Length: 129
Image (cartoon, rainbow, N blue to C red):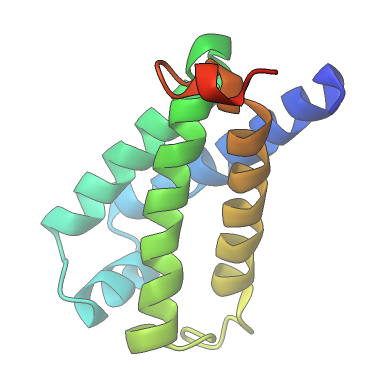
């Protein structure tokens, strides 16, 4: 994949992750509601916010894109799982926007992880031709 496209994907995923932090860190009522529903309020909300911040930063550093993508997939995979098991697709009349954004973020992170698989220490050597 072209470097400019990969850079754009990295920025998009990082922006999605980082823009949600204001809701988690300020205790927005919607964020509190979501984390109460899954039994992670308040410590889980803050911890996941910190992990999303770290993930967003790792995606912007060329040598750590693979780890940022992997961490993003883990975090967002958990969010998708919670939507499918406890929250539902639509949360507080949001028309499913949180769920669909999570799906998009997960898919883009998977594309990034695949694209940067050769950078993974030890395992990346197995992917090189």
